[in-house]
Length: 278
Image 1: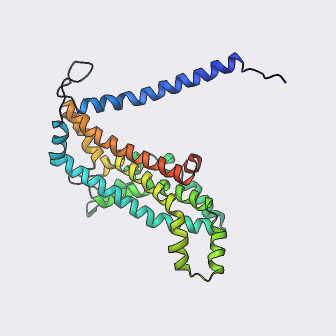
Image 2: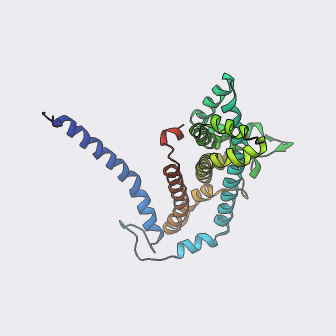
Image 3: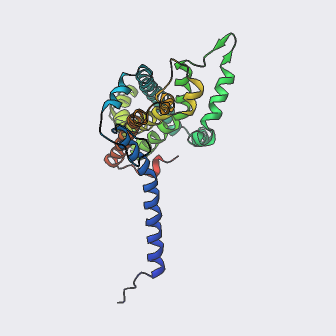
């Protein structure tokens, strides 16, 4: 039996894909590495790499009242966004899943592409026009910022939960629980929610990461006392280079931990990446 060798054209195509993929990864990684190096450098001006080593820039970030307040606000908004999205998303996904109405199915399909279809800038300008009046204004408050983050990130919560619900085959679990005489409350607390926990955690990590790093909505809707960390980070580049790099590194570390956590959950539960794609 003859074994056909791979053609030269196939090898060249494969090498070209690997080259461009490596180039893309290099393009993404190099700026992050330079920012990390710069956060520990004493001085970086007119040289390829910073000079000296110091931790004082991180100390300055954590003692600067503008950045500490912004960091607390970012974590508060991100945690509240996750909480509100979970409270809305879990019942909504279950209602859509068990419903036989085509309208709800279409609504879900349209919902998951909402962040792509409506840019944050458009959403932010619309909220300013809707909630900024001489006798009543919510612009600059944390409440409108939370509402904006909730609307913008809820697809990233409901999509993993729906994927998880479809994977566990809820119809059979529900029938088994009912055959044993379980009440609706018992099924929800001891059957449904424990089986949905991987999807809820994955959606929470995605929502938290996106909310923590969101800039466009925050810069439009936040006030001087409700600035989030990305808005304060934009102002950091008026400070010394080491300070700006250390402030950026903190946000980068938070985003990477969220990404690693999401990847770990996907491997642990066996949910494919395609099921999370919008």
